[in-house]
Amino acid sequence: MAKSRFDQHINQNEIKAVHFELMMRRDKLIRFAYDQNIPMDKLDRKCIIAFFKHWEIPKRPKDIPDLMKTFFTCCFTYAPLRKYLSSISGSIPSPSMLPKCLAVIYSKEEFIKDHNWEPLKLHEIATKIQQKEKYDLKSNKFKNRMIAVILDGTQEMANRLDNGIETFYQELDEINKSTGEEIWEYVSEFPKQIYNVGTALICDFLKDIGCDRFVKVDHHFKKEFPSLLGLDDCKKMSSKEHFVLSQVISRMLVMSPFHLDHLLYQWGRYKKYDQ
Image 1 (tube, rainbow, N blue to C red):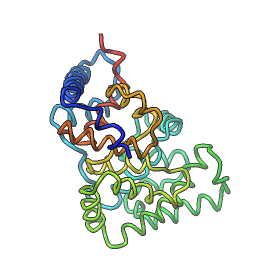
Image 2: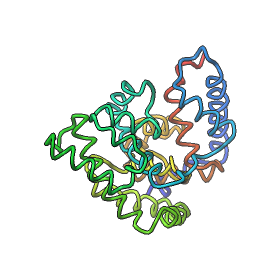
Image 3: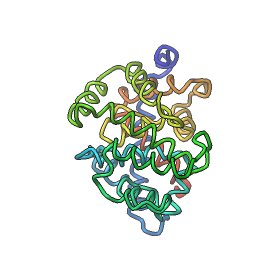
Image 4: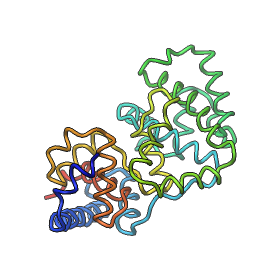
């Protein structure tokens, strides 16, 4: 496993060096966020200040409709699809923007009504759209992909929320206390019934609802994480091994995996402004 392969090569001096580098990146990102001359998405500015200046974590949605908006916003962070949604919303899509985006895309005002974001009601709306349009649900075209994800995702979330949102959050709190391997098993099982959604997008969702033990192992993470640690062998690691190693490193750094992940992500986006 990742721990046995790598932690023996990481001593306290190296951890101190990694911590110093991360804190330097943190300080620079905060400075970038306050510099209006640096082109930066408004949501990124807000997140950098909240997560790095104040060391906050995302707040949990207060009700099921807000939870569902967050869920599908994360499911749609597949890069080309996110760019498509950004072209409609004018910035990186947020849960509050998603209903209007979908209303425009599918010409359905029902998406704007908050009560329609209950899982089964949203499934009903997507079903009616599919019955009319007959999209190829295996296609990667944006409209097709989103309807396929909504159809599968609403059913999955309806099952997970069957006992209410508080019970769902209690279950997540228990998962958040588990070992890296156990957490990975959970995120591997979660999306199995949702076409075109994998572990990375589910981790994105769980991070965005306040679970601080999760990292999103995507190409951004796999690029920044190895270079930070100086471990070339990371390139040979599976997504699971990356995930588990991130838990080990975070524990050594006394930093949540969420903050490690977000630092790597934001630095990857804005390090070009480091002069």
